[in-house]
Amino acid sequence: MTLQTPFAQIRDRSLFIDDVDAMDLVKKYGTPLYVMSEGHIRHQMQQLKDSFMDKYDNVLPLFASKSFSCLEIYKLAQEYGIGIDCVSAGEISIALKAGFDSHKIYFHGNNKLYSEIEYAIAHDVDHFVIDNFHEIELIEEVASKLDKIIYATVRVVPEIKAGGHGYIQTGHKDTKFGFSARNGIYISAIQKIIDSSHIEFEGIHCHIGSQVFDLYAYISTMHRFVNFAYEIYDKLGVMATKINAGGGYGIAYTKKDEPLEFETITSEIMNIIKDGYDKRGWPMPMVLVEPGRYVVGNAGITLYTVGTVKEIPEVRTYMSVDGGMSDNIRTALYDADYDGVIVNKAYERKDTKVTVVGKICESADVVVKEIMVPKPEPGDIFAQFSTGAYHYTMSSNYNQLPKPAVVFTYKGKSKLVIRRQTFDDLTYFDVNEDYK
Ligand code: LLP
Image 1 (cartoon, helix red, strand yellow):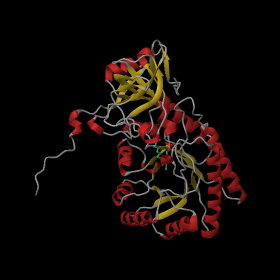
Image 2 (tube, rainbow, N blue to C red):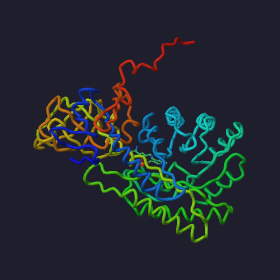
Image 3 (cartoon, rainbow, N blue to C red):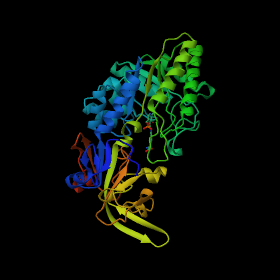
């Protein structure tokens, strides 16, 4: 059992999250249930503040909100003074609805639609992480139409391979994201930005991948980025006054994972940039980082009720729960590993190896590949740990399962943040129209 947050503990014959008994949450809100420890989220956001924002001048951490997006999280980000990375007009709309400062939103994405660019600019979002030539034209067109100036960082591919699974690597040469540095492609993009009248070039951005444990990958990327800054100046005569070093910081899902310290990564990043800029006698640029999983990943615990337990002699024991790949796609998609515990049997001997599966009509519907638990029975409550990032945001209604509720816990209390979907919600978007 690996609880990766001090905000949750096994004690008094149960699991307590921010001092709230998980069994009480089950009684109050039902299962499956996403529980997010606000204590943990605040702790991580405070960390971004203490070890980055307050430690260096002219820096800004962005929370990558694709990892967990809802009104409440944007309010928390705003409270801590951090910015956010949004990857669609949908995410931007939620952030704005939460009252988030539009000038601290950085708009990412490899295929921003005209309508999204228009929505963002009309709502005073003025920081764009530019991904491709087409986008430069769209932004110029919309910004001139709306008479706005857009500040651009240009996403450049460092050709570094990093990240927990092939699907979540983004900095290698064969990627759909950003401008290649080959044949001066990114230099032409920056030239195009300089030539446009409503976009101001500010700097460069990278994101090498997700669930990264390799410090050397960050170090090599930053060395390349300093060289990109030199090349930009030498070829175009402009200075990159902003460097966004991306996110991707790995967290521990099981005992096997050994995450890097946030401070270790950021101090390497800052040192390399400082050395590189000092060498040219340049002032330090503004530096941004954009972690998502690091902020919310270990804050999440999903509570499920156990149903069928099926033992196949000499093969495997399947323990089914009342959710599955509709609320957790990560095991099927990335072969991800998880830990967990049967809450109501937390102190019993773990003598049964099970595969935790969901109730979805697919063999890929695995929640936890293999885990030792006390002999499971229908009605037990299984808690899956570290489900705070890319679980709720990647959930679906597959097999028409209503999405679970999201509950926050903090200092011995709980509150509903997203209500459980109902059967009515499942037909909410259906319309009854005649052919015409
Ligand atoms: N910045 C950019 C440009 C990104 O594309 C991402 C994640 C992040 C920051 C934040 O990465 P993080 O710190 O959360 O690792 N669904 C996958 C992860 C996909 C990440 C996509 N981009 C998963 O569940 O592992």
